[in-house]
Image (cartoon, rainbow, N blue to C red):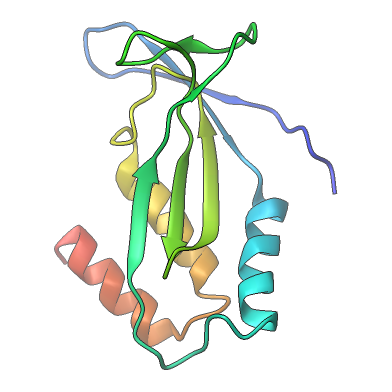
Length: 131
């Protein structure tokens, strides 16, 4: 599995002029969901809570950015089910967790469909997106 992948650059649609760099590693995300399923930590037809949260990781690397707390670092988001990680998306420091939140949650739900029943994924998707 290749560890380093290309960052995708997005220009902000607002007037801030910020650039957002996002990196998703589908192989790693798939591995996390497969581990949850194969170890029996998550089972189909059970009720689970999904959490979506961002965390600032301060560092002095060259490709970091200034966070909303005015520190330098990254701001990855993590989706977890019952505190078990199933989806990780790395972001530069100036990209808040709310940026492209719907598409990130949709990708996490698509990933979770591997371990959960499609009925759960569809109902969660409908509630989140108000459909």
